[in-house]
Length: 68
View 1: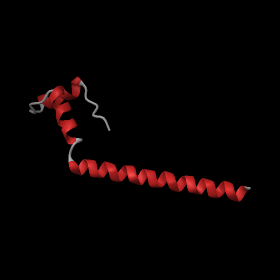
View 2 (view 1 turned 90 degrees about the vertical axis):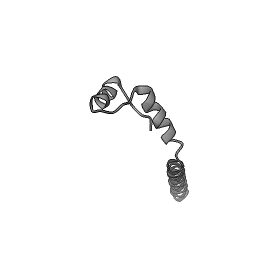
View 3 (view 1 turned 180 degrees about the vertical axis):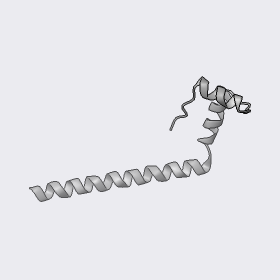
View 4 (view 1 turned 120 degrees about the vertical axis):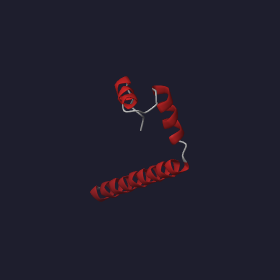
């Protein structure tokens, strides 16, 4: 997921008392993507997606084999 920021969002944060600008928010976001917990969660999600894709392929192969 990419962070979608615009100047209005940054302006609202600044008005709410947060000392941030676009560049600082992008830095924070990029650092968060290096967090070990995030990396583990992402790897698990990718493994699960691969397993699901493999299961769908096996089902499709089985279905086509039954149709022959």
